[in-house]
Image (tube, rainbow, N blue to C red):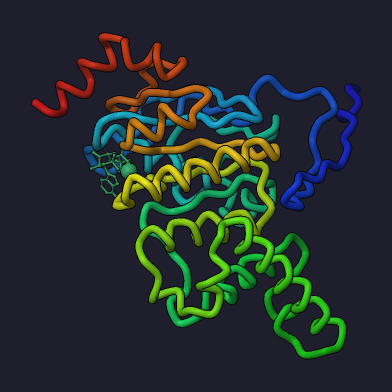
Length: 278
Ligand SMILES: Nc1ncnc2c1ncn2[C@@H]1O[C@H](COP(=O)(O)OP(=O)(O)OP(=O)(O)O)[C@@H](O)[C@H]1O
Ligand SMILES: [Mg+2]
């Protein structure tokens, strides 16, 4: 019987602690033949590709290519009709979102979520509270131990705000933030869960170019701390700037995978984009 892979704990500079296999797998996320239809619309038509650990991988493709649907299927929001998803060598196909999050794979949303009636720091604390094995009610109960836990969460949230240079708005209502600041908070909320890999859906949509560059810098610095990313984005300047590798989807399939330069110069990719525009 094969022995389980030896595991060790790693802690990144932002405090993300996670188990990693001592022999790094070639792929952290493997998507194999995923299929999914909405009635007569085939959104995923046998999409397969692999994402290597420690990289920022871009996922691009024309509108309707199936990118968000793929994120929904990978993160457990919709069950695919066929195919498998493996994360760190484990089959996570069809698991509920919370199980997938606890495994270290977490997604953000195209429209930044968050609770508008809470302050920015409370929003981050709420996410940090949802650590594996810890119920939210425990974080809110007023025993001395829980008060210490709340203080620790506040400290972690404060460190996150410092990292994202958002301390000045710590006590503002989340609903009062600009669109760009909400995007940064969304990244912060996801980071509070200490993920190994983040799926980002259009982090720079509706964001001005200088904030998009700032966001890109934060994503790169998280990558340097060991967090892997799969990033859906239509902003090609950002994709070219931050991505180590790019996957192109069109009509529910993977069209190609390569460097940004390879992808940009590929006639199949150009045709897919132009075909949609036409
Ligand atoms: N809930 C749904 N019900 C019916 N059809 C859907 C649903 N969600 C997505 N689709 C269809 O599935 C296909 C893929 O959509 P999806 O949103 O995944 O594309 P996308 O690549 O994310 O596009 P965009 O770049 O515009 O965000 C499209 O034809 C879309 O109309
Ligand atoms: Mg989408």
